[in-house]
Length: 451
Image 1 (cartoon, rainbow, N blue to C red):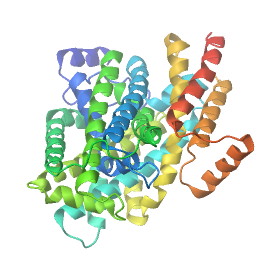
Image 2 (image 1 turned 90 degrees about the horizontal axis):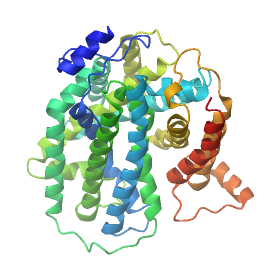
Image 3 (image 1 turned 120 degrees about the vertical axis):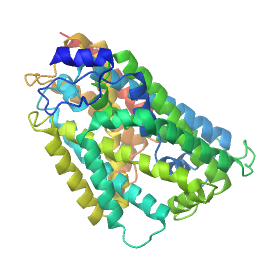
Image 4 (image 1 turned 30 degrees about the vertical axis):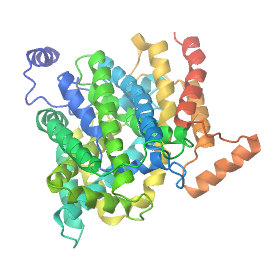
């Protein structure tokens, strides 16, 4: 089987080759440079990206940064976050193992179930959230403001189908979606730039690192998913480069589009800003078509969340057929999208995502500076409980700077900060600080126990 896969990969005959059904089967190395760039570019574009630009422009919710300051925060944060994401993509390409399975080498088999559980919960939540966003966008696009459920069912069904054929989806993204999405984004950006911009330097630089931290967090949120796809890459170098280029270019374009819209045609203080921004995009000449392309492209997000949930579960049930798991996860996400107003849980999902920033640091340091050539992803991977310490301390550093917006959780960390006499400074980035803390604490442990 391995020889057949290698022949297909080298000959370019990867048509019809799909991801393995169980964890026991080897991952085919069929994703080339353009395949991966298309994947990461499409994941970097999101309907929520332009809306999320408000957290960069007004990081404290009141005072607005200047266009120059906000744009620089977007670029700096995206590049830093994508560098972490791209580094996390390399081990999957080198080992052929998905992301949560790689954590067996970091913590051991049993302890790897803890981050796997957290990842599964957050991924199902984000899949539900994306299905709702797609449905709302489609409803606004087609103008039928009756029931939302038909859109939810259609979005859920398409998400499930895509999760069953993941490598086929990536090939479709390369052939068709990459160009269409790039043109749609560029067209909408040109249209909003036709409106006069305010002074590029009018505003403040206060909150620059808070705005930067937001874009870092968005980019690095894909790190727990990266190896689920790059295990099919032909080399670690292509995995790193494609993620770095594809994702960073896309996220910068997406957030700059939102930034320009907020400074020209959309009111940042609007209570229904998402609806207003979508309406402005649809209203431009041929905007319906461009926005429709972005709505259809959002299925990539729900697909990535759903498929990575499936692959994460295989860390616990390695011989389960991923097609069956995809149907179960897709059905569950669709039902949850029909029942719950997932928007109220977004802050909780962001909180769960924050624990993966320091985890990524611990993993990368231990992999690249410790046991890279002897990384054990088997079911006999021994327990390495001492690696949990740097992770938890990194989580604590993140929460002390930015405990999020879940009321009871934030209140508890404010009490901890008062007890420690710690006051977060405006220049502190929760993502960068937690990453550095976890990395520094991991390095001596990794070298001490490298053998």
